Image (cartoon, rainbow, N blue to C red; front, side, top):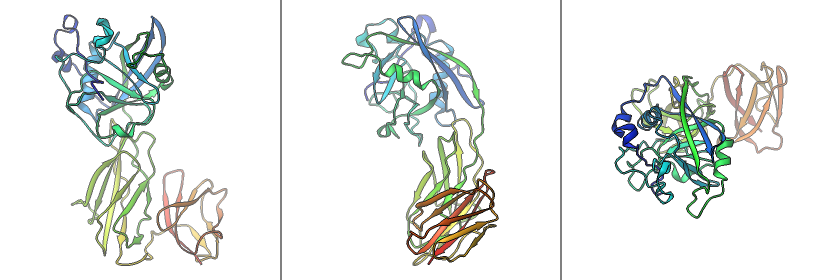
Length: 376
């Protein structure tokens, strides 16, 4: 990507761009902004975005300080590519010739890269830059579709929370050979408040706590939180996590831990980062790496499953209506998922291969029961 982010402030209006950087407010959560867009003086609509100071504090501080000086007002979305993104924020697009739009102002201070596990998904707001990873300044882009090739290469620092349809309208604007809309699309950016929500700790999913496998790699999975941007995963051979085998951030609700040692018990936990705050940790689960084969370790459950073993029909009793019952094979693949209609629920696995399976029972109040069933 060439200089897709850059820009400078007119010195007559703002004196010096360094002053703007000192004007950023302190954040109690995720700052929220409205981006009003106009074409030929006619309002297109408003897009609302929230930024992630808990993930990319330097970029958020820079954006906020520029908003405080109305820096973005009357600048253009000067580059629109359907199926990819819209880009704007270059001060050249106020009054300078169109041929300069996107080139930016080299006198403006730059922001150091903040590459994280946050993903370039639809609605992601990210910092444009040139070939230098630390060259971002005022220009930003909003993805209209996932752009995985940008992950870890550009600094995601916000997302659209409403008005993505306006972004879709902008990206579809008739444009020239360099993707600049024929009619200028101006923006006006206003700070409107803060999202101070603290996210929930995620519910762990797989592998079943207490289960064992001879594999030296294990896929850890948990249920995604609706506002989760990054998840921090910790794996340890110590239940108190005084040392770490792995301590990583990921942008999805799964992580594969590799290089596991045989005859070793591992503990793991996860917490959610929603861009403004971290959750507490999830419950701690464990798995065992055996020498060979699948062992019989499983978590204790409060439900009754009968018969177990069975030739195919298993009845779960002492469950609650609308509990979610999910069955997994030994690789962790979900093979059946259903909701209990009353306090007893029968599942049919007669068409499945004989062997060991695991189940998970999840209630509305986020409690999880687990265990094993044997199909013979």
